[in-house]
Amino acid sequence: MIDLYTAPTPNGIKASIMLEETGLPYEVIAMRLDMLQQRQPEYLRISPNGRIPAIVDHDEDDFAVFESGAILIYLAEKTGMLLPGESRARSRVLQWLMFQMAGVGPMQGQANVFFRYAPEKIPYAIERYQRETRRLYEVLDTQLAKEEYLAGDYSIADIATWPWVRRYYWAGVSIDGLDNLQRWLNAVGSRPAVERGKNIPQEPKLDGGADEFSLRARNMLA
Image (cartoon, rainbow, N blue to C red; front, side, top):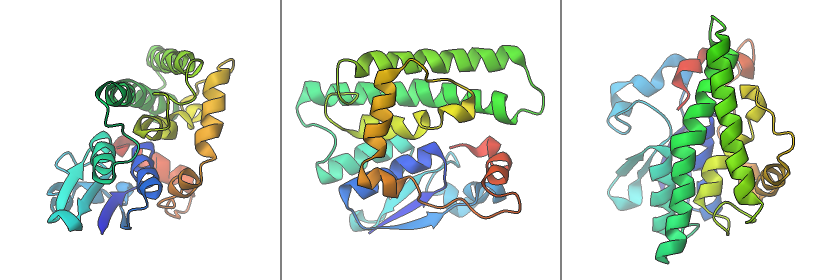
């Protein structure tokens, strides 16, 4: 059994989609980011950076894994799924996984903050991060003109990237004209495991609903 510590953010959704794809049994521990549960000492023993998601694999002597990309690799290696064994095919998947971890996530995350949450609207920052996010989308679109999925076959690279790109509108970024990216968004989003995983956990019910949760969690987008 695997414990999944998570919240309804793009990085959290990566882990739940992967667990649904692999069919591994798991239990959800929903973290309230707005209450800073991710900063509590007991959680920091699992995830030292105080971010979600994290997992604890009770079948492997309570082995803990933090960082969403590391979780995807760990679960892929544990199950032999969604990460090829052949060296060049594996490298292609890991290259696109790193592209998301180093590019799409950080840049779109900053676009989210400056466009949606920052108390002071700074046009330079908004435009910079939106422009860079759009550029990264264009890189994805070019790759997806050649391949059905990012590394050829469906893989952890797609699982890592889809939860971010699907929220393009939240960052104020357009995907107009990116037909290959739009096709891929629909293809990944129609997978049954993705349909299930994207809703784990449900956003907490606050007085202002999901938008209020997002606002109060704006500095904890892990």
